[in-house]
Amino acid sequence: MDMYNDLMLAPSGLSKMEREMIAVAVSAENRCVYCLTAHGAALRQLSGNPALAEVVAQNWRAAPLDARQRAMLGFVVKLTNAPKDMEDADRAALRLVGFTERDIWDIAAVTAFYNMSNRLAAATEMQPNVEYHGMAR
Image 1: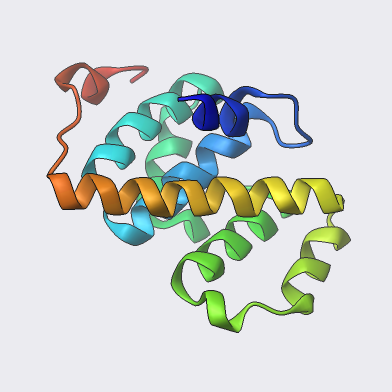
Image 2 (image 1 turned 60 degrees about the horizontal axis):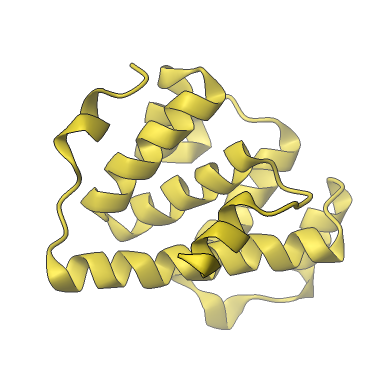
């Protein structure tokens, strides 16, 4: 829990909403029902926009995101699906939209955490609390 609190709640150049976007995008790539449901609810609450959260969960590329969020999620998805292919150009694209080196570290750390969490949830067949399904709709 300490690691979760540090990644998701501590001061960062990333907003809480951006960190939840990462959790949802990673979980969508990994098809993690538990995390998609729980973090989808959190993204709906933080964004105040249930439609945005649903589209990020279904296909973030179709979501109405700003350039910063689009670059961030592109990086996150590549790091999730093809970590061996990461290169300086991927980090440069984040710098171009205003992310600092610390922000890039935070993006990578949140991405790595949710990839781990998704795998643990899959291995143990974790199921979301029923209440998450109806939250902030």
